[in-house]
Image 1 (tube, rainbow, N blue to C red):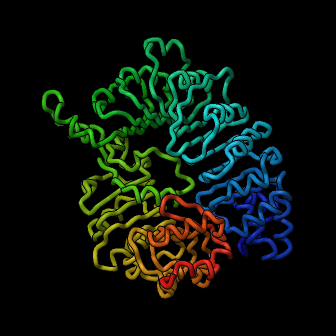
Image 2: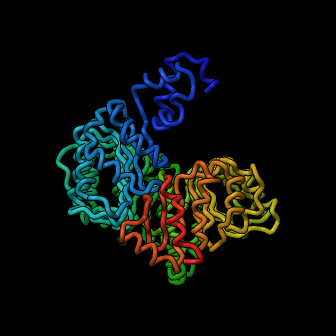
Image 3: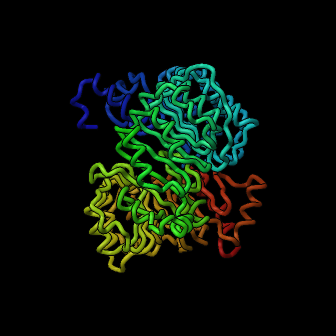
Length: 575
């Protein structure tokens, strides 16, 4: 803050309005500096209230005081159960309508609570029709049930002020059959986990002339494809298209649609294996998409062997594709069911929901060769025998990096081929026995937020290697959790906010309060011998803290009640 003091008040107000979280302003900075800064904070007329990762006491203070006091200044509101279990439900109990936030421009809401009142949630979203909100992101867990998904979705489309809409259903995949009668103002539309029938897709096409980004899943395209170009006006502004096609189709069918998107720069298609024909795609690009820079085709790799066996003329089509389309990698590491549950509990907020495709073997990321720098791949899985060693491509936008069997050769390749400063999540499954190997990797990951690693590797990490880590996951295998372990972790990662463990030593949970001063959530696998005991406490409403349970995993939103020693003594060896 001392460096900001030399700036004029007008500039400071603009900085705080654009770049600071309103929750931080009033919970961390107000009354912490001089009276000038207090005065400047109070002059801010645009507040971004991001409640993700908030401490339980901060959230309650915000709901009880800040939101009521400054409701006419809030331009962006972010709510989520993901890192703060029960947050959305608590918020809606206090504010059942968003109408009172008249300056609201952007709303992000992620609901994973199966106990939430779906009617209350739906009514709150519908109240946005009486605001001027321009950007809306709604993510809904599979256990949230609406009386009618179509009514809920059509109600969202009736919010006329929207320019950007992202709507995601996790795991349910409802079918959508809507018809629009008026023009939509949408410029960016993402529908994930929603299967659009062809009339819905066509109606969206007709009534969304301003679309620049479209991410949609289609069950079937219309039968009368030869009349498409006559029926629809071209979408001249559409630059990015992600299309999930859940039926058998032909490239010629698709070309009649794509010919109406002449400005398209990025295209991703998730479709059947039978369409891996490089010549056909290349012809389509040459004829209809002159501005295309990136092309991605994702398909289920498990069918590739069948396709190759019966390929006409006995030609290895996959080898041709690797040469023609520069297949960056051919497999996505398959995670087990245990991994998927844990990932839902630690899911990043800027990740949209995906179908189970991210946990299947996939053939993916075929890029039109334009340059040697790739900005499309955000999730990369590597091993010490990766075929990428011979690649000259530089990956400039990898956010999630998974490494199996880390060694010196892989470290060398990563140094030359990946922009490590952009990596946000890092998973290391096996590692060379030399401690320097792991430390070398971590030192390169200057902005890593989440580290998923085996508990035994903690002893190899040097202090100050990644002191700004926010989330540590050591839950893959059962490990001990004694006070010396807590001290070790706290020294390595002093600003840790989220911790995932897998231990029988639950009676030591109260010790966390003494060593972790920034912790927001604690997630752990419930030991089998304690599962029924915890279920009894849940049934009798004897669990003193806010939590989320998914199968045998539990996430706790930490406050002082979390460290009630009498509660955790129920999980000691004596009991």
